[in-house]
Image (tube, rainbow, N blue to C red; front, side, top):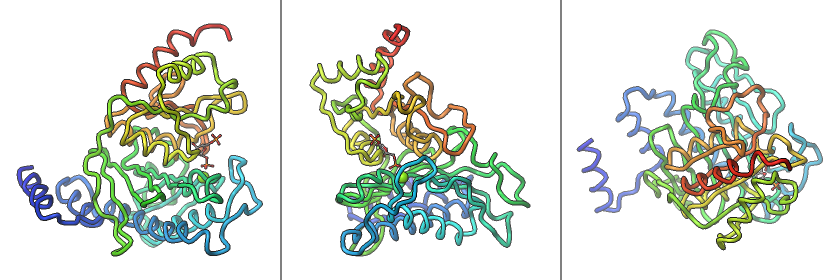
Length: 347
Ligand code: AHM
Ligand code: MG
């Protein structure tokens, strides 16, 4: 530990850049239980993110924008950039040799990855390759969300659904990439959260936010208030409370961007169940679990609007959805009080 502290100090004094690759290798050395294969997998996620970033940045220049016309597994319009991002992540992860299967928002079924030596492919990746897709056509931030599990099925055969249908508490890594004014990759392996900003001049993700701890309280709330009348009474009361306190409403419509703000400035993100989505809209496996993992690791709280801990929710299908309320500890605690107070009232 002492060597680590001294090294961090030296790096700060001499302004030394730490790249994502360097950081991953270093973390592997410091944590004997983490394997080289896991490090290679994280590195490959970084590579796929760079490829997608390149395309997101030039999306306005080439004819890659626009709705493709098909619909994804949950019935939303699929846009070309979604398909591109999906393909690039699948391609990169499949070549890596560390992954035996991938589940994506864009594919109804999980994708088994063929390998010459299946015993080396110990992990499965779950992902939303391009979250916030309604923002693509209008040059507003989008993101990628990912989570990594260790496989459960025997490693001498193909992956099975049991490898994917694991609770959030079983996740070994989770993160997001934000393609915004800068491109950032933020991830956790259960040992704190670190953020890396892509330096386009050298093409590397560089450590920019070490051991992120989110504010315990904040004054931002993030919810699609257009659905207000479709929310349960307790959520409407809580939203009234946020408005009474003059909290600032911010809603980008890209969960990655909205959570990213909250991560640094404090606040609460809500996607409650509505009449259209009685169980919530966001997908548990590749949207809610990874974000909940990050939020908890950064000192925040993540629960459903029925007050269950997101990470412990049972999962039965790949595209299962959930309601969600996550963010600064004190704000989620206040929301909980509203649910406890008004949740039993006949609506
Ligand atoms: P997507 O993965 O199809 O883009 O859907 C997820 C997104 C979230 O990023 C965002 O918070 C939410 O859907 C926005 O939905 P709505 O337009 O209903 O508010
Ligand atoms: Mg999406």
